[in-house]
Image 1 (tube, rainbow, N blue to C red):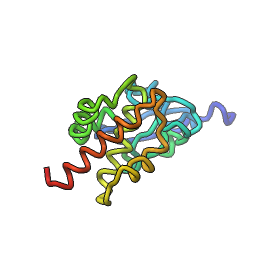
Image 2 (cartoon, rainbow, N blue to C red):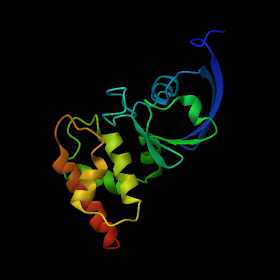
Image 3 (cartoon, rainbow, N blue to C red):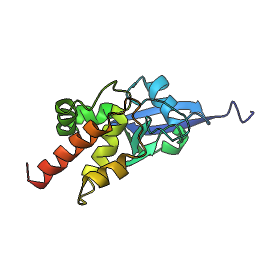
Length: 163
């Protein structure tokens, strides 16, 4: 069997559900999530890991799914925006994005929410500069950065005040 047609069996826990599939060995995780599973919240932009639109969580850490082979997720836990939305984990952040008009075209929004959630869960002191730095790997083509930073800062302040 040639390298281009080689397949592998995978078992991935995706948003709390066990998914078993036989896939091409070279299929990336973004394509697996979008085209095999049908979850469209994981967007693909540059396919080089630069824009951040394909950000998902793999075992709790943010990763670029366009640079990760689906086979690498075998036996691991993958969370997409759909799973974080269904669980309610990002509801406070989603509400802040809405209040601050931080989701203009919405293309970058899923990855921004995932990345911002990782920062908010980090239990570190969060400033506007820290938010900017942390989100710097996620590109917004609408240049809605100020509103996005405002929304993340609002949630960070609420967490610091115990709300």
